[in-house]
Length: 274
Image (tube, rainbow, N blue to C red; front, side):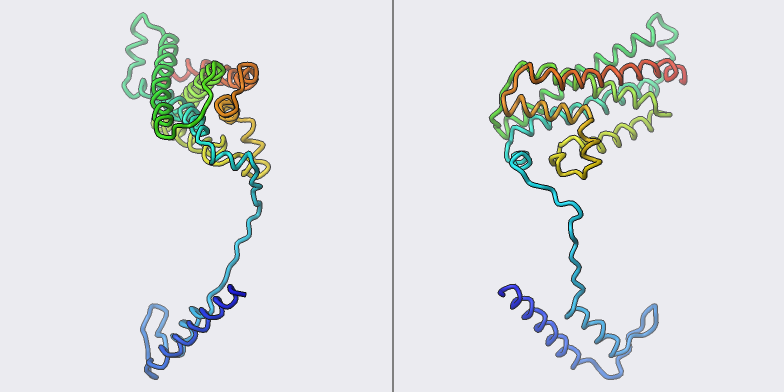
């Protein structure tokens, strides 16, 4: 009843205000424009649309169900520690590995390596080790800042080690694969950034994957980084141990092996294109 009164009052107020404004418009009013001139009657008709605006109601096609699990997503500050690890897997790991590899072509390092005793395989191994070192440093900084600012109640467990290590390997190997599949260094940078931005919306970084429509939710669940976030949450927030971390860590390890195998297969062709 109160809502109906307010809406009726507002509509009547707008109508009377426009009537008073119309009374002051001259009879011979003519406003030039691109589509022709606007007469007094045209202007009044146009002004009346403000008194009776079009009311469009947008209905949600799929209203996500808010459960205790999805509500805890935002309420538990410890979840952001998992998010920082996932962020490092995708951007520090994947994008960083692609950038390191692409820089070899931009600086013409491969030509000098081919004329030296160092093999291209030593180059690849060195890049992987170097990227993992940089990735570890970035993770320490990201997680430390998150813990200092939010002060979450989390469980530090040895079960985190296999999850973080396999997540690092999966992210870095995927970055190498994308870089080698790209036609040039610029395309590699753009591709890894695009893939990273795409993935962050499907692994639960900003909202629970339960909010995704059915087909997209199924796709999100098979992503290795989604498994990583979910497993990290279980360890950090619910105190799960090493036994519960084995399955997701194995999933990440298999993904890393697949990405690495494809990257190794493409590497000779990539190295020979300079």
